[in-house]
Image (tube, rainbow, N blue to C red; front, side, top):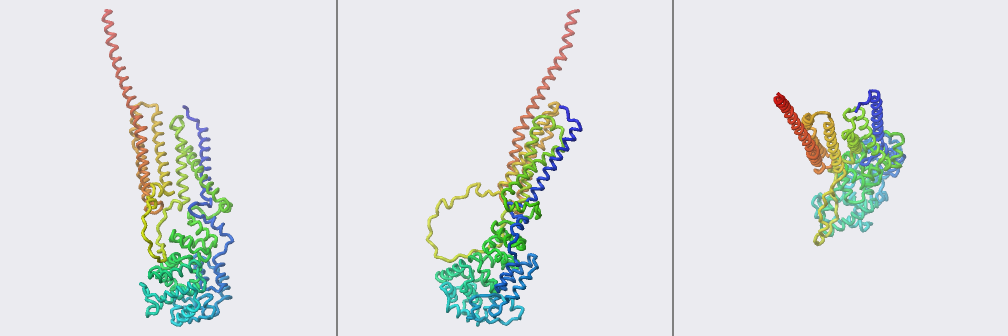
Length: 587
């Protein structure tokens, strides 16, 4: 078939170049769309939180209610997050500063302490330390404990009475009993809990659970959970003032969540203001704790990033349990952030569609620009080229999707932020025979996650592409206008190409194992060894189904050519002798 003239070839290459450029434009446009499945794009987060109350607004509102301690904790969180404008907070503090001694010691208002029925004496300390005195040192002095115990005993509710009755327990392992020479910390801690309960500042669910725990522990004599709770309260009371604890306990719904916040404070106290501000701005203590437990240090960093944006940004992260996107850009591409807020599913689908269409166009355009003359000849090799380009484009689109969605395929790393749950002691029920359906083992494919499926799909596409490349090469050799001997030698020369599936499979397995060790993808041997399995299958198909029959055909053709050559040579040798005999007869 004659080749195209240079002018037409040049015009075709320009068309392919435009196709390649158009594909790249689609890929760039998809990359800058502010939508993501496994994470929240910064531009979308900014659009969501526009006009929502900020950290300074929340701190100012707390200071306006006389709650100095929580307001100052939010100021610390703002400084950690890079905020510095707290003029409104300073004005609110000046206008609503605590006036009585109890409020100054508590660093905020409390209905029982503000009633004047209890007068707390400030421990001897310098004026600077007195302004930031934690709750436990404020209640440790004996006059304060006696006054508080007397007032709480006189008007305690049934729940408060159950809490106060734990002062008489003696089976503690980590505390000295109240009333002994070393029992002041335990007594002050129990009185603090009772004070918060009786002043109705506890979360109602938490108040009921504490009362039930006190009653159950006294009845069962099992003080393990009660002592763990007292240790949590003691640890927080040694760090924070009464008003700061009061606001935290007002949002914490249960003992296990409180144990989580205690664990956060013990593990890294410098990050605690960020968690505290998240709770104050969203009102969701359990969601904040679950978020940090799930994402660890990275989760704290994302909360720190979202705090300057406002309360809606924090609430979005907690509700969706997603990280902030780290790939792409925070800049808006036109009004796409608004569109993503209104039509998130449609824009996400458009992003993936642009990735796939753009990848296929870019690969096809680049292949056309390179121009291979052997593929311009009509035949099986030329017919397979569009299919190969399409599969390469799909593979490239899958890679781009994985890079743009890093948290979608990322393994759930185990963080050390999880604290032990608090369970109210109860009498052990009688053992019952286990149900076989409850102990049924999980099926083979029930633990497969998206990361595994994605990896297996990518490895499968790679091996299909390798298979098509091998088939194309066989067809190219077959269509050469050469002898069968030369074709056979060319086939033997391509043995390394025909083994490429195995090499790629081994490399894919090694890469998957490395990514699993680095916690980039889910640790699953199915994903890793699938590459090796696909490679072995690909090589088996190429060599058994395609290479072996074609070589056999060439060998048979060579044998046929040799037989024909021998027959022709015999005839040529026989012809002169026959002519001589005829001449002799004539003579």
